[in-house]
Length: 189
Figure 1 (tube, rainbow, N blue to C red):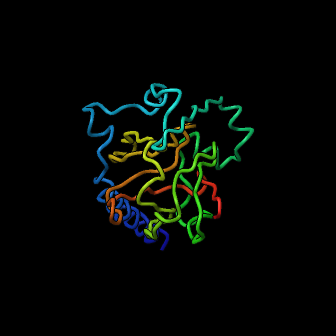
Figure 2: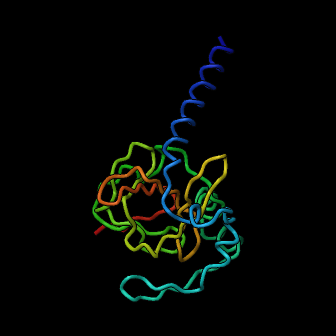
């Protein structure tokens, strides 16, 4: 009986990884397609500018802190996801079923990232959005870990890991920003 359960678990995992891999093969045009050689996360983060300007002309300064400083501000799970590119377990995030009107901000630096108007139910287990408030607020990094070609999404102000973006979202963009709840705060309207 125990061996049968183990076989079923392995089979279920194989099917799940196969389905995830099929969805993840559709990635946005980003660092993955711009370069034949994938860019390492740390290299891209270090090469970014110290300031950036949003679509309304507002200038934001980059936030740089040591791991020790981040550990003082974030709990263990927040640190794991935002600073170490971890992932919260599916269907466990406190913002997954949030239906209130407002703005989702970066938990690390409070940069406004996504509007509740662009949130949709994807069924994936993480909050999903079809576009950020401003494209310059999120960075995209090639993520080829685990044999998948994915695009990691990070906060452009503090370089915190948010999640990934895929090309299987709804119109008008066709994108699905699959974001960890633990990477976000919510400011209600």
